[in-house]
Image 1: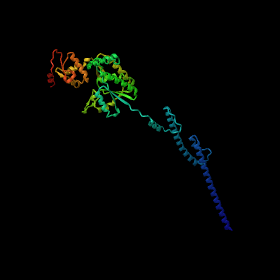
Image 2: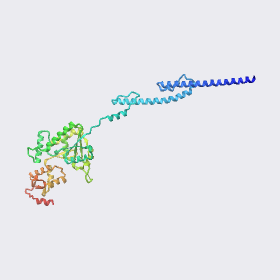
Image 3: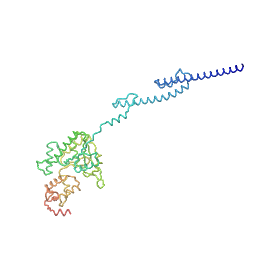
Image 4: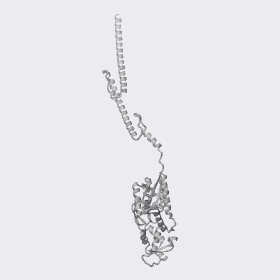
Length: 420
């Protein structure tokens, strides 16, 4: 009986211990469930809270034994703070973009909505209508120079365009009030005298330029994508031609360009550097570089240059010389006579040889018809005697200066001996 009683006592103690353990485990599990529920409630409260600082503050109703949960929640709240701050920065950036769009006339995006701004601009650039190619007209006062420019188009097709050649030489003869009938008739009479035309004949050079100018103005008026490049060499003919033409182009300011090759070095066929006076002296490949010098004629030039041309046209004298830049000086008709007599000298000389000396040695750059006209004027005044007919060419005419003598003999043998 004592053994059974002892066994019963041990069994009861074991049962009590088991119940204690179960109760203890149950309490711990209950406490864990309570802490987990508290943690979930705090997280839900933190997410719904509008102010991120409230997520860091512990609930007053939490007991002292939830310190571990508070620490975990505190760490989680710090991370949420960074996320919220980043979202706030993104919202600020969106507001700045919206302000910029408002200044540009665009509708700002809704706050919090990311706008594909860069993508939209790229889309607009693709949909933008391409610019129409510009049509270039090239105006020259030197026909051989215009041909050199035309050949340069093969090297630089971007500058390809029609060549307009102004035939008249406005550095010579009367140029005042050419838009009036009186001014037109005065220049017409001068040309008739130079070319030896009958009074009823119209100089083709004048009528041709008048038609070209009319067609140019009409084309610039009708074709808004057309621009004009005026090419000038460092000589009086090109500069005088520019002055005359520019006075008709005021209505097209912004579409008129000038390429003035003034005192600029170029390379010749032998590779040497030189400073050309005429456009015809420049190689086609050099015009590729020269085209980069094209610039728009400024508004001040449109105001001042026609006024300068008006002053020049009213001065007495029919010879205009380039003194530098775009400055022209006016001289009398006989200005070149002394140069012709100096090259002729005391000996007899063929007309063809004299023309060559005036072009190469004296570098006058004058048209042949004008020099012949001045030589005929010297013959009329008795300063030169001649033999032969001008109509048959320069090799059939022999010239000799009288040098103030009343009686001068001229024969072909004297010219041959002087040539040797």
